[in-house]
Length: 171
Length: 171
DNA sequence: CAGAACATTGCCGTTTACGTAAAGGTTATG
DNA sequence: CATAACCTTTACGTAAACGGCAATGTTCTG
Image (cartoon, rainbow over all chains, first blue to last red; front, top):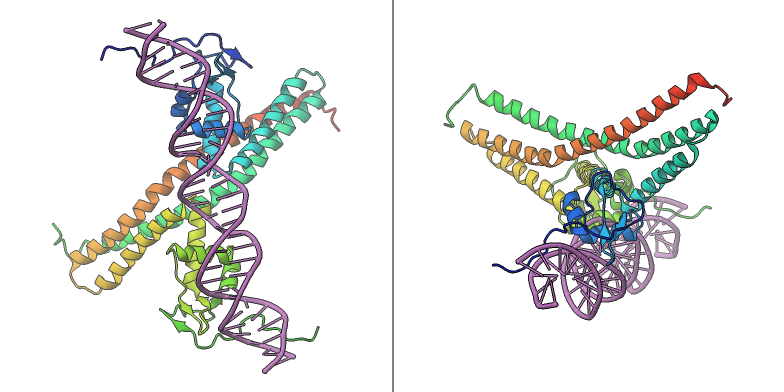
């Protein structure tokens, strides 16, 4: 049992960053970020293939390296997929939309012109509202469904309660 | 434009019922019930193939005929699929579960024994609670997601409001 | 520097949930 | 009773979202 083992990457030398997520330290390899996000490496590569995200960096040997914001993005993708039930194509639309708004912000927020500043923020609001417009009805319908099922449960428990006072034989 | 046309089935003679949904009258053919449920005939046949539902009757010529309770069931399937995001296999489990409870009710509700009556209703409660156990976390996560997105919208609108008082140039 | 444990790309396979077309019966109406 | 518009079963096709190899390269540790 005393052989070698590389295990967790100690430092990740020579990371060729694209943006350098930084601000928290370690870059994760695909299996690590996958575990952290509750996904598989295969899914993450597939998402990359669809253009949903790109790792912030690659190692010298072309290993994908992910930072904290990449992980956030993966969690967002997962949530939109599992919770909101969006297809990966729809998720792509959402992310692309947000991305273009974010770029617009970076490019134009530097301006002094209050009309442009307004326009930028209004664009972001519209983007977020488009997303809400798809999520809200879904939420409403799920709430109705749950309320319905919950109502059935309550009615059954009332009937149980009615049965109680009579005979306490089951004990 | 004065040729013949059968259109909607007038009466549906000789319906060989399995249970006879009745209590509202007309039996629907597959296309009609599909339109009413917002599904396609193909989907409905597929659901039948998976054992999710059987039409309450067939015509002499083997046309599938659906009653109101069949339609209800289809709507339930659709809701569990679209709103709750369950797979058809999971939906099958749910329906089977409910079905067996319902059968138990019919078979044993006739009994006088309060212990058995309790047991039956408790079984139904457990079944409904199993369903709730899968739906509730989903609802919670979707609520969190929507709240999150909604929060982003509000923050953006606050920034818009901060921009307002200064310059009202955009008009 | 050996080597176990990671990673890469490429590619084919699989499951789910249907779509679609073929070949042929069924139904209500004019 | 002809016939348009339904329906039937059977079967093959497909898009989405990965799974799972193979062949090969990379990393960190002892």
